[in-house]
Image (cartoon, rainbow, N blue to C red; front, side):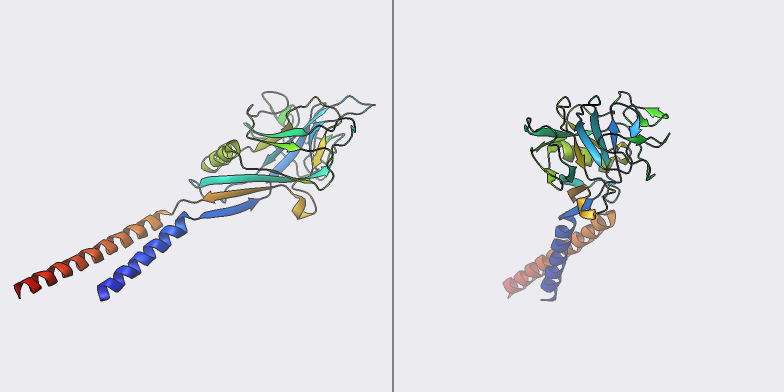
Length: 278
C-alpha cells in the first residue's frame, strides 16, 4: 500500500512538472527605440511620432517617410520557441489629404539588417512635414544609420526586400484608429532569430508598398506617446525550454518512479510464488 501511494505521488509530480515547463507564456513589449527618416534631407525624428508614406504639398516637393522600430527581447529565454507574434499600433495622423483617392494602403514590415540610432533629445522632434536637426553619431537619417558616422549601404535604410508582414490600412480612417499586424510566418521567424541571436536584432522598418502615391502619409504614435495605451506593442506567445535543473529533476523523478514500478512487480512475483508453493 505504501509503495502504491509513493508511485502515485511520484507520477503526479512528474505530470505536474511536465505540464508546467511545456506551457506557453505571453509577453507584451513596447519599443526600446523607434524613429522616422525623411527622404528629402538628413532630418531626424527621435522623440516625435512615427511617419510612413509619401507627403504631397503644393508648395513643396513630395517626400517619403519610413519608420524604424525595435523591441528588446532579452527577457525571453534563449532557445524559447516563438509560437506567434502580433504588432499593434495606433494612428496619430490620418491619411485623408487626397479625398479623390480612397484606395487602401498596404503597410509592410521589413527586417532591418543594420543597427541604427535614435536620439532621446527632446529637441529632435520632427513632424510629418519636416524633421529636426539630426545629432551626429546618434540619430538615424535617410542616408545614415548614425548621422555623419555610419552610412546605410543604400539610402533609405538597409532591410530585407521580402516583407515579414503586411497589413491593409483603410481610407478614410482617423486619429486613434488601431491596427494590428496579425502573426505571419516571417514575423515569427524574425523574432525567433532575434531571441536566439540577440546581436542580429535591429528591428523592423515600416514602409508603404506603394511609396509613389501622394498625400497618403500617416502618423503613428511612438514609444514617447504621453498616453501609454497609444504606444506600439509587440505581443509574443512563446514556450520556454526547461532549465537544466528541471531536466535533472525529471530524471530523478523518472528513476524513482521506475524503482517503484520494479518493487511493485517484485512484490507481485514473490506473492505469486508463495501462493503456488502453498
